[in-house]
Length: 331
Image 1 (cartoon, one colour):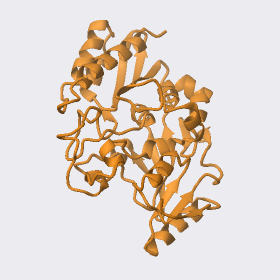
Image 2 (tube, helix red, strand yellow):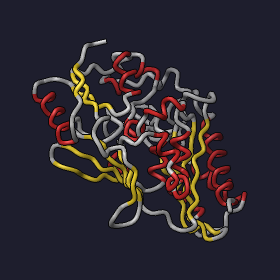
Image 3 (cartoon, rainbow, N blue to C red):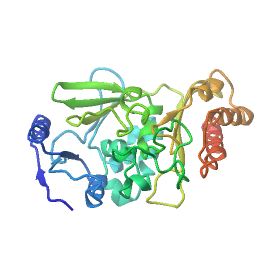
Image 4 (tube, helix red, strand yellow):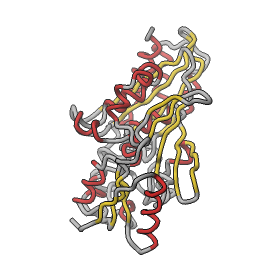
């Protein structure tokens, strides 16, 4: 492991200054919140920073609070997954996010892992993580296309077929969240469509953060009365793993009629994958088992599996059907 300097900024402007100073002197700077994913990548020499800017001591970046002016909730980027899981407002009004956070890894990881870290973690593709010169590592090919692609993308792939590893990201997309990003030019807000990046847009990145920018908070609008939400995750083992397939679903219900729906898939695409056609089939309708099954069918209509991951198609279909039906039947 390459030696690096650990920097502990006193506040956010100081952190941004340290990052800029490193870049201006030709050094590589990495940003650490909880640091669980970063430390592993440093040990595996996937990244070799000269400076690690540790944000953990900056006050306020771990807070969860309601807006003083305007509706909704704001979650600091350094809020731990455990604190999100246990937060009563999130559990009551944004259950899909609480359930997604609670599904990540193990209790030990959730105690230190942060929301920003979970959203911004790098892919867990075994080619990328094991030193292959793939697109994600700056190479010119995706080894999964003809190789071991059991856990790779069935939507949105090409030229890379990685899947986005975050559990909380699909939940945030389903909740129509916005990202607050700080950089040397000030703070900007990005929608989810502006934040996540497909490989065809940038094969080396999963999001639009510049090297000198930090994800500082996520803002979630108020939930309408009648909103029901859930996160359903399928794994290849019980813990310490990422979704083979997941679905974050938010339904705005008027008794048994769906006023609107947001369905976002995880584990199946390089970004959280929204399926608006499946949402539209539910809108304005009384949800029945037949309609939930139709939504599942439509959700996978554009899937393009690789040689070894076609099993994800019926699995995704079943996860959508089951979750929609469970939410519709929830009192």
